[in-house]
Length: 70
Figure (cartoon, rainbow, N blue to C red):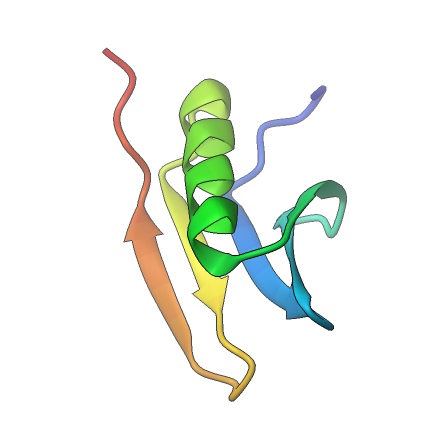
């Protein structure tokens, strides 16, 4: 990626989960929420992003702290 995103978002998309940058650029799709969270955490760690936002289908959100880079 060229630009560092401020946050990575996980959103439901039909029966899949989409992982995307703050800008809306799609990074990946996963079949279940747990895998989407793992993928988003890895991407956040690689890109130095501090948080991941999980959007549930009912409109609620939860912030997940990304693991720090050692």
